[in-house]
Image (cartoon, rainbow, N blue to C red; front, top):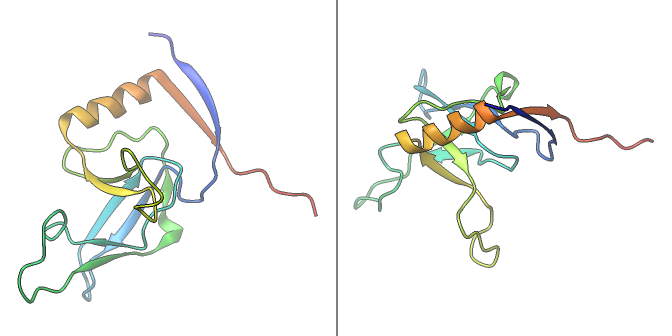
Length: 134
């Protein structure tokens, strides 16, 4: 199989990063969520048990917060485990309807295989956005 090397200059600092989110209680659980694209990410995500459903009567949202930003790790060819959450673009994104082109998605077997094939075919070389001369 031929491997193609692609150069990509990132536009956002959190591009292709694994990021740490923590449950909002002392000693709360941690979840690492991968940003599968070069785009912004939310400061908070809904608890897994609340995501993708309507709130129950009287239920308050449980928001996990992005913490320890210095521990974010850029991994452009990450192959996320099945069942993990990632940030992905919204299909058919319309800026008139949605503020930001990002959604949280749970990885299934098919999606994992797509990331595996992409990682095998394309070696992505990341460089930071060019800085302006003063």
